[in-house]
Image (cartoon, rainbow, N blue to C red; front, top):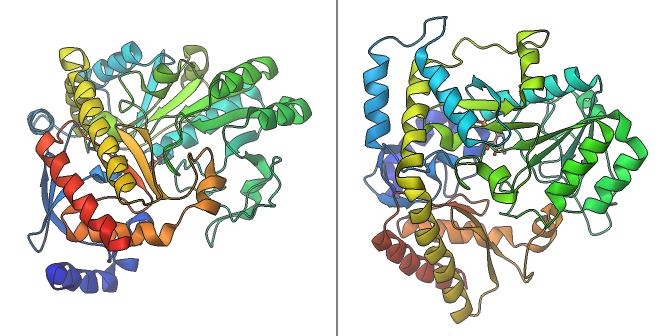
Length: 434
Ligand SMILES: Cc1ncc(COP(=O)(O)O)c(C=O)c1O
């Protein structure tokens, strides 16, 4: 623990004034304990003890362009000097909305907020207003924020015998109102026959089908061929709305997100993370015929929505993402692809059952004998999480920071040299947990 002495002291202080020493429960379980950081630039993160890390956590996703991107910082710095909040509109928010409308297939209109969690709430309210129905279909292992009505089915206890048919989900935290589960039906993901069966039985009750565009919160699982198109078809047939939650995939899988990458246009989509380069901004985008209800009878509000700092950050981030015809995406594809292939090669050589799956900008590592993870249950039942935790700690000791639930994010700032350095550390760390 010597190398994290200052972090440890701060952690001890923090625990006296911040429950668990953190401000987001997601951070509690990072081995060896929640570390403290002092600065970050590009793909590098430095902790309070001066240890340097190549970062694949990237703020849990937002830093697709790297930490402290100069163009974003300059834009924020200049804009905020003209004020931060007007309790009124600014030119910037119109420009950012126009850019989102131009880039995202389903986006005819946009509303901004500060977090993905909030925009998911707005989505559900809107879908219920539009359809006059209350039931929402969700999928196991998908995460849509921490509020009562969505912290459901994220990490359910399952066994090989757990029925695969639609169920009301279990609550996940003390204090959560149990009755929220009544309005939700949760299914394994990527199994269209199950969704078809559910729609045949209860389609006329379903307001909304909510899905990550690619399942990044448990694994990095691509939609099975025809799965998203099948959801689209069922929603159309039964008058339900389709929501793709693109808080992770938006502006990461490409300028048009998962909906562009997989060719399925939802009615509504939520964005956050990569759209503002590390600053808080999030959006709900969708078809105008539905979105206009926010101007009529559906409430969506927020003191800090579309504040100048968030808008300036998004404006600059989107400009960087669009630069040179998406050069950042080509870079991430190349370095992330090399990293995935390199890790696979090392694991093969060491004869370790390490599965690397996903896309170069967001991939997942797990110790498993499976040849692919296709849904949450594969991960829950067949992956060795303890070993992966030990692996992440060994990586950290070697200057590589990853999220311990298995996902690796790659940014436009990662260099070939950093990828090579990472692969050397991966080899060492794998040997340590072999
Ligand atoms: C798919 C998805 N939706 C919603 C959220 C919640 O976003 P936030 O943490 O900004 O509230 C997340 C967060 O990781 C997410 O991954």
